Amino acid sequence: MKKQQLLFWGLAVFLLMAGLLSGSRVFYVLLFCQAALLLSVLALNFWAVVTFTYTQTLNRTKTLRGRPVTLSLAIHNEKPVPFPLMRIRMAIAAEKKQQDLAFNLAPDSHMNFQIDMPCPYRGSYDVGMTVIDFLDLFGLMRLPFDMRLLPYYRMQTVLVYPRLVKLDRLNMPALEIQRFTRHQDLTNDHEQPYAMVRKYRPGDSASQIHWKLSLRQRTLMTRLYERASEPDVELILDLHRGSYSGEQASQAEDVFCECATALVYYLLRQNWHLLVTGYGDQEHHLSGTNLKDFQQIYNWLASVPFDGRLDFLPQMKRSLISKRQIKARVILTSRSDAGISSLLRQSQQNRVPVYMLVAGPAHPDPGEAALAALFRQSGLPIWFIHYGEDLAETLQGEW
Image (tube, rainbow, N blue to C red):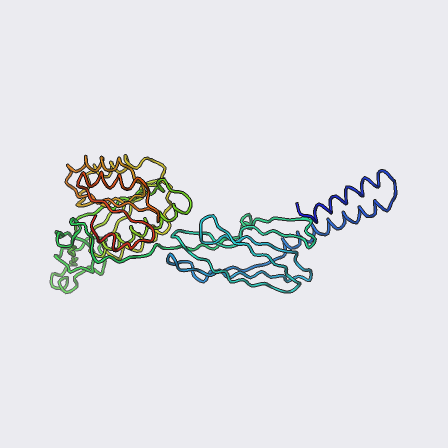
């Protein structure tokens, strides 16, 4: 409790005791004045709560990791009574961090703030005002007011994307473009050259009708298009923070998603049929065949929570023994679990190439050296990517 509050309440107790012991009116009058002052302070705080207005906007709602965003906040007092001291707690684009603003506001005035928010890690963040503390000029009473309790109040949301590192190549032989095999399939994608025609069927798009041939045949004819199909690649993501917490967990998540983004972009640019399987609190499945599908997966990687609580090994085993026609698998995790090595060694009989990547914070996990030794003994490829390292150099280098 502050000195002003101790002095105020101490004086109130003294006046009450003095009035009771002496019976003098002057002590009760002074005590009444104290009570009136307290009520006026409370009324002024409530007045500020119900009458202040504000605007808050972001200069952009999407950004790239490392690029700050600016929140513009304006507090207005359109009444003839001054506002008491206001302390606003601001949620910013960083986990469990906030910024405080403190000011007084005179009658018929406003206060503008430009708050630059660094975005050190990818993720979706609610930013803006959270709790406003109204404090009187005498420091006697603090009235906290949580803006989030208002049904009409909405915080601003900023989506921070992981950096996109464009790889020239990958040191993963099964994913080399030269090993692609192609086959033809019939599709309705009219962006491809058509392969054959057939009679019109109800539901066929008008854009697919071969009008010249239809006139010659005196019946509607529909074009069917040819599509190139590539072997499937599965990217398995372990959405678990591993043994990390705090700043280290944020670093591990960030480099994890940056690595996944680079792999997804590279594979879709090569026109692989890509399946992304994420194991967190629930299973996530996304797919793509070319760069048109990249943005959807990119949005998901920017906001997906790392909430996995289950053992990753049984989940990974289900993917490894699935009957999908997978030509190669890439596994990305933040755990240095020796059990992964034995599981992959057992699955080698499937003859599906598997590549292992372990993402972690700037300071390596002590268990990485032992895990690397197990993989090398088994002849299995593994890469370790740490926060702050050159991602392209790591992924394109030797394992």
